[in-house]
Structure formats: C-alpha cells, structure tokens
Length: 378
Image (cartoon, rainbow, N blue to C red; front, side, top):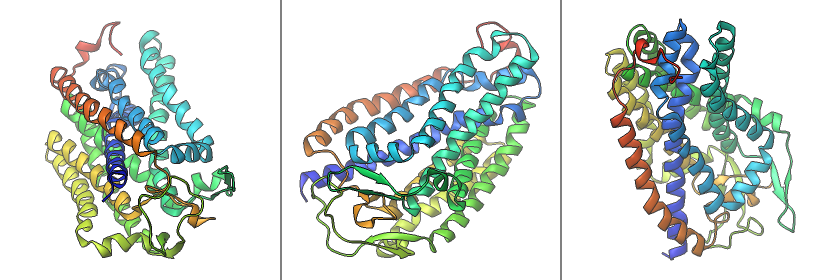
C-alpha cells in the first residue's frame, strides 16, 4: 500500500478520534449548561453546577479547535466546501459558542436575580444549540448535501440551507447528540455534585441515556431506507486531491449498509453505542456516576464510529452531483502535508490527553455551596 494512502487512512481515523473527543468533553460541558436551570433551583446550586466544570470547560474547547484544525490541514477541500455551504449554521454555532464564555465570566458579576437568570438562559441556549447542530450535521452528510463543482473547482450550492436545518432525519440526529450531551453532563454533575443537584442530575441523565438509545436505534432503522452513496467503478485511493473527474458514484437505498455487509465485524460499533447508552443509564440509576460517564464515552465512540464506518470513504457526498462528492481519497492534503501533520499530532495529542487527565485529577472532589460563595467563583 502506498504511503500516501496510509496517511489518508490515518488522518481519517484521527479525525474520527477528534470528533469523539469533541462529543465527550465539549458535550459534557454543553450538557451541564443545558441542565443548569433544571438541576439548580437556587442561585447557589447553579453556581455549584458551573464550578463543577469551571476548571475544565475552556481547556475542553481544545477538542473543538483540534477538530476544525484537522479538517483544515488534512482535508482542506472539505473544510472550504463545508464551511461555505453551512455558513449560516456556522454563524449560529459561532455566536452560541461566543456567548457561552461571556456567560461564564459575567453571570456572577452582578448580584441581581434578573441579571443572573438571563445568563442562565444563555447557558441553556449555548449548551443545547451547538450539540443539536453537531448531530444535525452528521444527519445532513448522511443524506448528502446539494452542491457541485464547476470546471475551475469553484463550488456551487444547489439547495437551501433551511432544508439542512429542518429535515426530519437531521433533527433526529441533533436530538440524539443533545441527549448524549445531557447524559454526559448529568454524569459529571453526579460525580462532583451533592444533593439535591446529584438527585436531579441522576433522574434527567438516566432518562437522557435511554432516550439516546431509542433515537440511535430509530436512526439505524431509518438509514436503511435513506439513499446512501456507493462507487460503481474501481477507485484509486492515491488519486489526486480533486473532486473533478472522479469515479462514478450512485445513490442507492441502503447503500450505507454496504460496509457492514462486507465486513460484519463493523456491527460491533452500533452494538457498542447501544450498550454504552443503556448500561450507562443503568449505572447512573444505580448511583455509579464514574462508570456511567465512561459508558457515555463508549456510547460516543459507538455513535461516531458507526457513522464513519457506514460512510467510508465518503466525507461529504453530493446529492446533486454524486461523482463530485468529497471523500478521504479526493479531499485530502498532499502527502508532504499529511506526513508533517502526523508528526505534530503524535507529539501534541498525547500531551493534551496527559494535561487533561492531570487537570481532572488535581481538581477533583465534591463542589459545595459554601465553597463558591465568593467573588472569585463563577
């Protein structure tokens, strides 16, 4: 196998790992923000919830930056096309993520009920909206996106962005992502919180895990009837990085199941997702939040892994010009770029994992109302 092909495969795997990290770590913080008004009935309880993720939320944003950076460097055609096509969606995502750190910094600056309640609504919106968009984006690419390229490589958008936001399957995927986020956030509130936050988070997160499992199964059945994408001719994985003049691609009902039929071992991924969600919910119900948190992480692995396995090697297929859809093979950077990026990834990703683990180890333990009753806490 050529080195160029190996590098493309490695970066496809790394991209999946970064998306999983984003779902687990950023999703956890977003879940706490979404739950803030429901687990905290008093201002003190809400401050406790915020301080549970206070030492970690900004560090966890590294996964968001890494995901975008990896797409930019390893798959630049995907980066340019997707960020342009989903421009309005990206603006909504960016706005909500800008408001979130503002809410952290300003909520407790004024000791006024209406002031703090207004920022609590910002936490809810800026926690739920990004996760819905994250899941909906997965649903969008599974259905194919309406775009094509002109002879000069300039992309043209063929469908309204409103359809991307509002179609039923994308909404289902968005709700699945939100449910997993609420589950992960609830598990963290149980790990570091006390009653009554502990009990409220336990009830909501347990339900969220079971709802996520149900939505995941419904989505899996639904995918069977969705028109997926499949090559109808031999493909050269070491092809030039251009979507023009590629092999023929057909849209076929159930095509996203082809990889699972060809390699039955891939069925372990959706099984992992369902098992993680159901057992995670049972673990929280049994008051074992640490186990539940890790099972939630496994659920994210199964969910993202299932999507990646179904779509391989497609990254963002085109519903209006299938042969011009973006894949691992035709949307990657040069061999030189992928090689150097891999060197930096091998160095810095372990460092990120180490300092994240260290931060959680050092800043562990329960957070109590008395500990946040000062001007230096959120």
